[in-house]
Image (tube, rainbow over all chains, first blue to last red; front, side):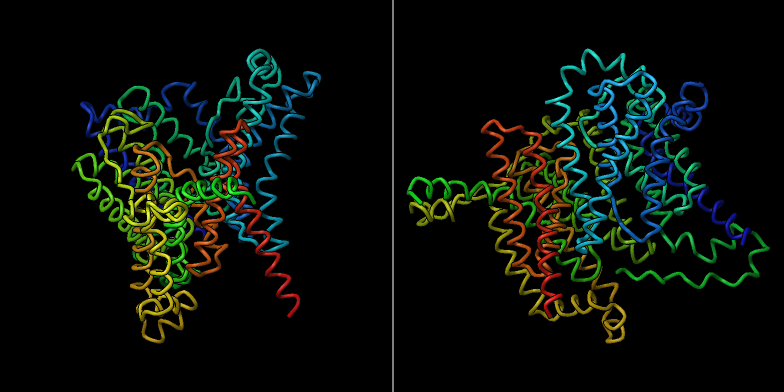
Length: 288
Length: 304
């Protein structure tokens, strides 16, 4: 049991390296110094303590989003509202800190609590509609993501924009220590859905919905993001390359033909695994 | 109702048809995939890639028709890739679709940057647009002319495809096999139907429809490609298909309802209502419609 879990980890690691290579090498080859690009992507995030810190910072929301996705997937629910929940949660946190007069010590906890309650509504509504009316949570959560974006932009542009310019720096700094909005940014700076919810989906899948494994999965994904941002800043490569890597990771890791391939498993496990009977369940998931 | 109101309504029809077109095309694609038991979540990314392919190919060849063809082919190719992910790699259908959407958003941005040096818009590419069709003899008539003539060629294609898809699903041998696979892949396989082949064809056709919807966005709705321009229309198409409960005509009426909601929201935006709130309408209406539909179904079930 431990052995096969280890084999699956090793296999995942090998696949991740392959996927990163498949996406990055052709892009790097286009540039005059491909090795410098790869070097910057792979080792750059560790060279500078600030960049290494960025990994942990970016991994925090990915972990929480990943946890949210894992909980829902484990319950057999395909609720994809995490993206909208993340957006609206961040906005509600900032709005609370800006609009409600609070003592300095209460800003971060109250702001985060309000953010969590408001943000979670994007996941709760499809959940309720599913439970009460059997309305597809997949479709309604995808719709509410976009609804959250535009309603959020309305709130920003009509209610927060003016005081934001004057107040936001000091107030947010006072409430610092929170998550993403309070921790990473000085102001509310999203004009589109930030994509952390989808990163959370990839993290949850990469971790096989295992809460403990979500930590390394999220750290790995944000390491890719930091590496992507580094090469985008220093070379002529858009950071969107990381999106391609994420998509391939999602595809490869959910592929039971790869992850449960008895021959590959034996290869990774070495001679000891050869005696084990081949995994029987390769085609059990017929498309519903 | 006065004559003036009626004329206002008639003049509004082209706007409704315009916003309905991409959703209807994609929704028909979703319908075909759903009836084959492989709900195409990747429709959003296929639309986006189709929009991109149309702009690039029409700019390269100087021909709008070549752009449309490229959009259809690329959409079909992505459908084949999704089928490969499900049947060869044995990945999860929904998650593969999500992966396709993530890859399409990243890939089109990346390619646009490599081609033009711009990540946001394809303004520097001299892409073509598909024509509007004026029907001689009808265009001159007072009300019918506005209703029936002068629409985009893909608008006609979308509405003509509705009976086409309906007949294909209900009257052709392949359509019947496709639905048999969707109802129960196991029984269909026992009956000698090649499930993998049927589902692959369904996803390829589904992708071709989504690609056509994408071509409308970049070669009709507007005349350029911009980052993430599909903006959830593929997901709205998913909602339309669910609301249409499995029939081509139902899918069309649902698409028209969502299209009308969006057209009204766009018109109200022009009257000074907050544009952000109006932009959220096309995404909130499907949720409300799904609930209304589900409630009706529940009541019907409770009565019997």
